[in-house]
Amino acid sequence: MLSLFEEDEHPLPRPAQAPAPHAHTLRIVADSSDRVAWLRARSRGITATDVAKLATPRSVQNAAFDKLHGTGFGGNPFTDHGRAREPEIAAWVLANHGIEPSTNLYHAHRQPRHLATPDGVVVDVHGELLLAEIKTTSKPWRSIPRSYLRQVWWQQYVLGAERTLVVWEEHRDFVPVHPEPRCRWVERDEDQIAILVGLADQLLEILARQQKREARYAPDDYYR
Image 1 (cartoon, rainbow, N blue to C red):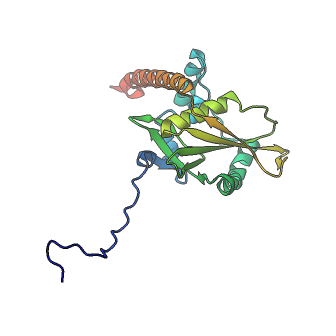
Image 2 (image 1 turned 180 degrees about the vertical axis):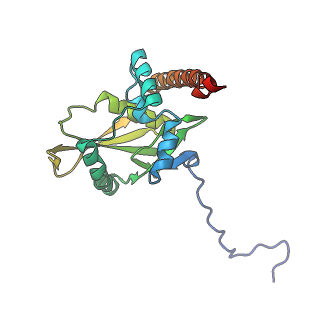
Image 3 (image 1 turned 135 degrees about the vertical axis):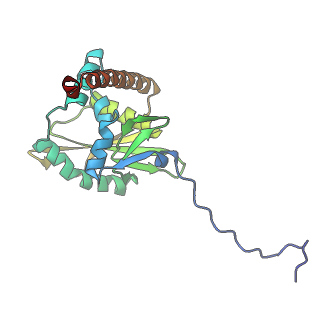
């Protein structure tokens, strides 16, 4: 029997502690598998799709109009093809780069209206957060289009990621051209992120002013 002051030569192993969740997992807003909730959450903030259009003051005004009134775009054969191919391409990304598919909508640290839904998310063995963004295209790319780079930088900002694997599959008449998708890493760019955050905040300010104006002149006021 051990005394109170003796140590067991063979102490029982301590139960393993679960790793602390990465910060981005605490900022999940919705999941696109629940499309109604996902669309509702997206409508309340600025997403990577919105930011892709933001390049000039005029583009901010146009984006505000689209957010308030809708674009009327419900999809076409190209977007349908992209949605159909995304799970297949995501499986390739997982098998070849270890980035897991994601359908979660996240908000940025301390800014709940800055939102993003990356196509893939993983924390690597070094604790670095990596993302994936999947595209399909009917045209060959010499470089990643600027609008897609804006989406990538925005997603990196929202989640706190350092790098994103942009993966694209070229098709001709909706048939993939190559046996495997093409891909390229995009590094985080703080200067570009700062520009996008500024434009997104301008967009939020315009939306807030317009919503106040519309509330002030709501139709019910005419009947009081």
